[in-house]
Length: 105
Image (cartoon, rainbow, N blue to C red; front, side, top):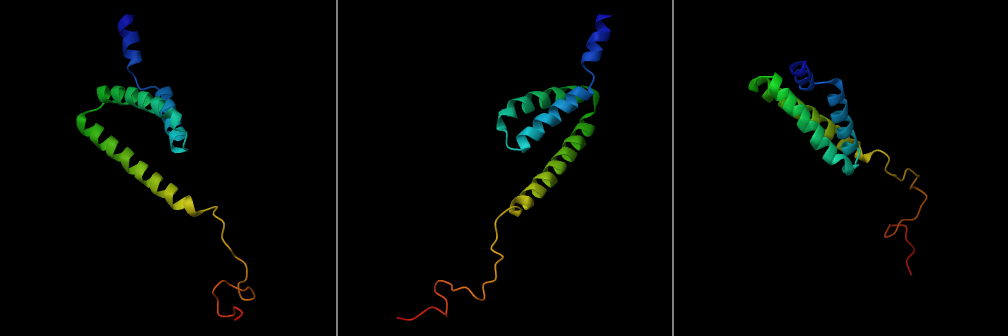
């Protein structure tokens, strides 16, 4: 009975994945208070995965996660320009500082 409980504890549970992704989402959104949770949950998930997978599978899995992280970060940084204020008014009739239509005194 005790061996079965020990084996059950070492399985990768959906809750492990959910906690890790939730912590990663909070950190990605800028709430860096969840960084400790991310490191703890990610470490537990990595330890459990290391017991189940071969070293080659671990390297390929971590590389895939890194590629996804790079794509998400790139997409998030390209969205930084959304929401910025831009002057879309017609400039033809407006006087501009240092412009050619400035009155001479």
